[in-house]
Length: 212
Image (cartoon, rainbow, N blue to C red; front, side, top):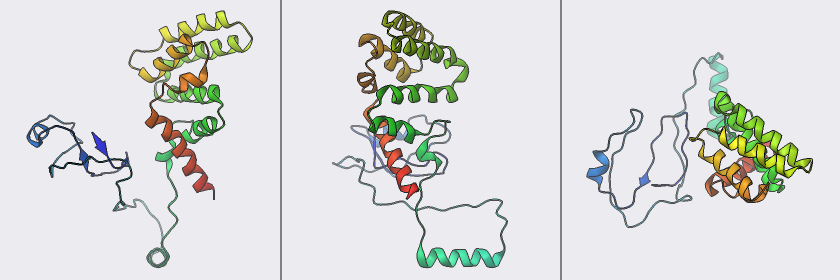
């Protein structure tokens, strides 16, 4: 599956998607999630890629707005005549207590351990009960390694890995890499899929734009 850009998670959206070597009839007959529909099928010799998107069209809904009608008219005329600055919203920075741009800062600074610490800590907001023990063991492992006791650090890291649920593939991959190449955080970061690593940098770029 290829797309030209990522759509808003919180919106009602539609977009073109290219699928390789699949008949339209097969796709149309595939059971889908209730919130997903497919249609408008066509065949092409070219696939979609990031960068093919020329723009978006939005219908914006404002709810529970308390403003005078005259003020609303002034604001709308200003939008029509002058446009507006397109600031990036919360979706670009993630929904956990650790914004993705902070991970991007660590990556740009090549502070690989800080980047990895933030990636793993952000999981606590998503699965606090399932990941709390494993994360605590990971932090203890890093502390032991920093004290010069690598053997104890690796033992704790193995415990952290053992306590990480099997469905947390990203976290498992990171800790496995730290065991294979003891506490080489730079190599461990490379186990994060490239698209996700780029997202951290794009988030930092967006944060810089919002700060101008």
